[in-house]
Amino acid sequence: MMTKKLYRGVLLLLAAAAVGTAASAAQPGREPTNLTADSLTYDTRTGVVTAEANVRMEQGTGWVEGARATYNTRTEEGTVEGGVRAMREDMQLSCDRLFAQGQNHWQATGSVRMVKADRTFTGPQADYYPAQNDYLLAASGGTITSADGTLSADRLEGWLKENRFTGVGNAHLVSPPRDLEGGGDRMNYFGNAERPYVVLDGNAWVFQGNNMARSNHMTVYLADDGKAVTE
Image (spheres, rainbow, N blue to C red):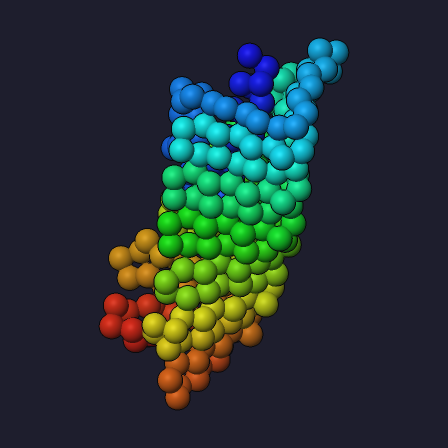
């Protein structure tokens, strides 16, 4: 029973922490589970389960590997550490350490790389809050890459269900399909709008082809034909 709680809690972390898998996180407890490790202990006094060396947890089609995993059955906090690799459905994740606090907060740290569908995040740390509209926070910065290009900044946050992202500090957008590059102190990207657009603030600039535009505030509409229209 306690080992089931261990890999249920940790797999919830790994399944959802990346780029928006809240739907799959609601189902893992109903799937068959399996845990292998060289050492497995349970402390009845603290309620902590610890798995060490060659840890691999499987649940349905999802799995996670690491050097060490712990789960507190009382606080519902879990960690996986050491060369963490995980996969569930169309999500892949690698990092140095993964932490979960209940089912409302997941944090990946150390060389984080998370792939969900056609979108990839890389950076030193990522926090994910599934109950808050699939909110992703990279307080230490990072890069989000998709087929349309890359968005990077010193601080990144995104609302994954809305395909909306904000970059603050050295915000930089590169879109090879549109032959577009832009930046500013702050950038807001609205991907689900009828006409997707980017709002640049503070030392804003946009370069497309041989055309350059600069302003303190600029809105760039991203047309389907690859042309950018600024306001």
